[in-house]
Image 1 (tube, rainbow, N blue to C red):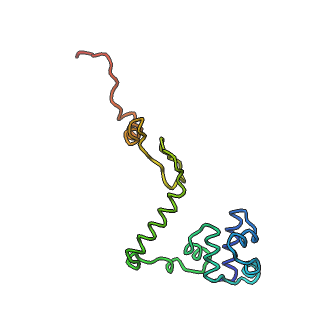
Image 2: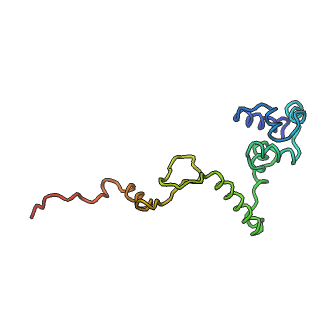
Image 3: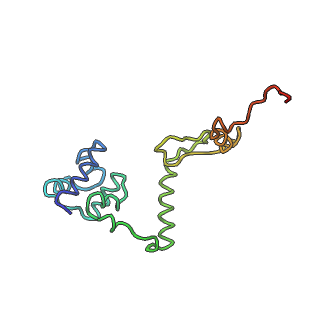
Length: 155
């Protein structure tokens, strides 16, 4: 890792969030003096400090370590066979729990198709036709629409 690469990565993360180093210290529990060492001396973090920073920033630890240059992308990837079934299921469960915690606990009557929505909420409303029927109708182009009834020409 090049000197200061960790701090350069951290500084970019702080700027993106509009944070000062003191705010990172409060959010992560890492001392301001340690953060100052990262900035002034270019020293890398310990794994517990990196983990605390990742949690404070809401970032997964491994991508944070890759982005900071502490891990090579190839080092961060493992084949699925490297994980036990239990580890894979635990990871899926954790990610699903994280995503579902962000979903409002209300009945969804209409699908949202906005870009950036990680869950693409789609549900059938009991008071109307199923959402999939509405979508199928919207997906038909004008050329695919059936002809409207008109006068019989009687050819």
